[in-house]
Length: 182
Image (cartoon, rainbow, N blue to C red; front, side, top):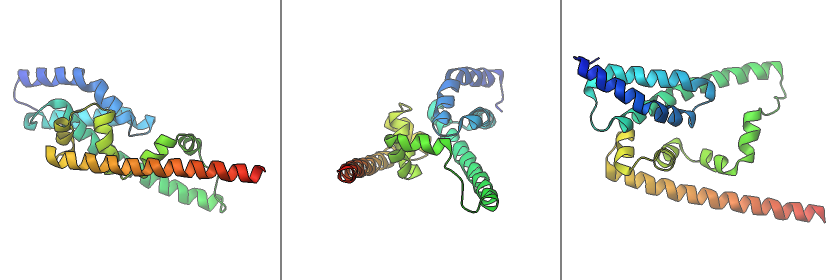
């Protein structure tokens, strides 16, 4: 880490100020059992790179957290695929969907958000859920403010289209249910 006690003091203060925000950021992106380890990894990386930090600390930490979360999801995906192969060997007809899938299926908004590309979800969540302004969000994503503004505009358009599809699908399902009931 840095060269002096002042660097350590600044890092320690930022750790105390940002810990909850980084934890919330990761809780929205990872399963609960992975969050504590991911937060620890974010601050370990931040400590190692503290002297190279530029700009505000929180967007910088969100950028690190975004990469840590992506790595965790990739690892989780590999583990899930392996578990799926093992499950398929045990039950060739496949199993019942897990409780997590059932909960998400009941949440239309979560389903719509999941249909968006990860890049769009990140852009929307940084602004809507994490409360960053466009400059800070651009820093977290490692891009310029203009590039971020374009990504945000496109993500919002895709979200609107997906919401419209969801509304249409729910309406179609409702009218189909009415027809079969009569």
